[in-house]
Image (cartoon, rainbow, N blue to C red; front, side, top):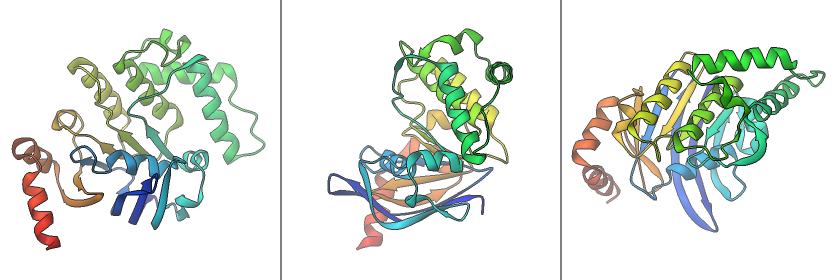
Length: 257
């Protein structure tokens, strides 16, 4: 099925368990937001789902399209249709945005058809310009070195452009609002909203309601102590903004006792 299904996922780093039984299903066409205090496992979940080698799964399963995701390497997960937008995108001097995107697109095409010779350069240029116009980006952006000297907003817009080019089916956005001012947040959010639709499921990780003022989630989850302990609609995020996380923690601790 075209859904990302996470069941009883336990994972950690350097021998420390961080995820302690995450259960979550994200379907295409849905936007799920995960909120929670620092250190509760939100970014660990993102990196574990995409196969970061430093994070080790000790229990549980992750299934997408009937495939055991945990058995795949990071590039294989990407080719399957998963995508991770980093909280802190890495700079790659000497590699232009356009060359990076064409290389990534060709790798995905070849995984689907080993005989594929890659997208012709003229076709790629037209497609890239079309995607940049759709996201209201200056075409000169494509000739810059990837994230080299980019502002926080430019880095995050580049991540959205990657989504527009690669067309993932499930996108995991790790604190996309981190380091953005109000104008950059609005522009990046507009780009994400432009890509929303029935063919894309989004798992949006954030600390703050402010991002959800621009990107309205279908479901909001609260993560504490490596588990999802509360879920609700978009109003849950507003309640957290007003009342904080203490009431969730008290409810969770009471349920454990």
